[in-house]
Amino acid sequence: MNYTVGLFIPCYIDQFFPEVGKATLELLEKNGCKVIYPEEQTCCGQPMANTGMEEVGKKIYQSMGELFKGCDYIVGPSPSCVYHITKHYDVVEQTPEIKHLRAHTYDLVEFLYDILHIEKLEVSFPYRVGLHKGCHGLRGMQLDNPSELMKDIPSKWGHVLGLVKDIQMTELTRTDECCGFGGTFAVAEEAVSTKMGRDRIADHVNNNVEVITSGDMSCLMHLKGIIDRQKSNLKVMHIANILNGDHI
Image (cartoon, rainbow, N blue to C red; front, side, top):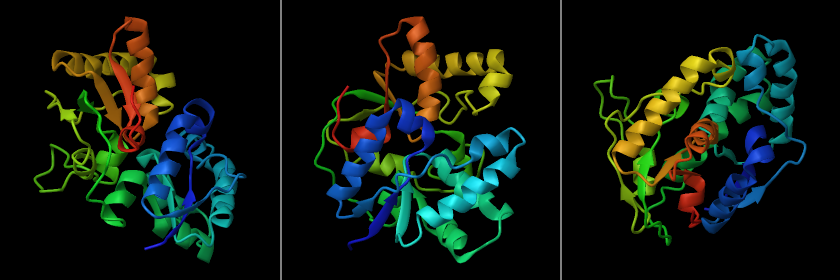
């Protein structure tokens, strides 16, 4: 199917990790999507909401609805930001544009799994990889099965990564523990945040991981900062880059 997809790139990816946005674009186009990128987009408004300034954020919510109207779907490489759009844009007037935005915005992996039903990738990634399951994607969007739930939820992350040739997925000791980033939590509670991040990195190191991947670059940004300070050889790479055939 030839879907028209609006590419939503979170602000921190746009500013610091543009390679993730490029990989997302290329991956969607490889799978038959017509991709448009509204250049006026800025931020989903989540930082404002998290710091008690949602009245400011509401202006962003409304503009997002206008920017992406006419798209069959809106896709972004960030469960955290996508979850904010789909679940927290209920505080503004539910215009047809906002309703469409909330109902048709997908995380990249969610879109590949639920809408495109992807079953094949012609890419290779010959490394030992540890999957960091970010909290919004895991518990908010259920892209994987949280260990505390007595449910059988399919792993959408695991499915798409399993299509990559030569990849060696590594089982972690604590499979779905938070990295400690949490957006503004890392600023307000930096000591706790750093300790949590160190624990997650230690789990990967102890299980001989070479590359940490995740659907949320914000988590990887937090972990990479600690890794760099530790002068470790451990690498981080967004799942979009792996699925697109990029290498470290």
